[in-house]
Image (cartoon, rainbow, N blue to C red; front, side, top):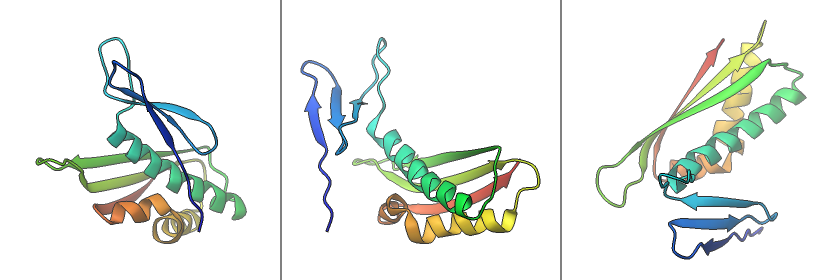
Length: 137
């Protein structure tokens, strides 16, 4: 079994935490103040979901020799009203841009990510109702 360790240091006197990932990358999370824009933890979860799935899809489409002009993922989530607030519904919208897109291969790549490869997607299934949608532009 593989393990990962993230080291999280509180920035004393603030609402900020510096997180150091297993590969040494530093990210600051917390709550925003007027002077300082900080990534909120729940939003970072949505970003992680989108990037995890996006990495799968790009890798699969490269293997399938599908060329894209651009690719965008919109992740929209609903928070519960009661504490602890969490995302109970999440919609992941995949948008593909390009000429003569191979929709069959794109749909296969998205499906493989959603159902087989994206571990973050699997984690979200434990607490959220997930919906996905594909759009072509």
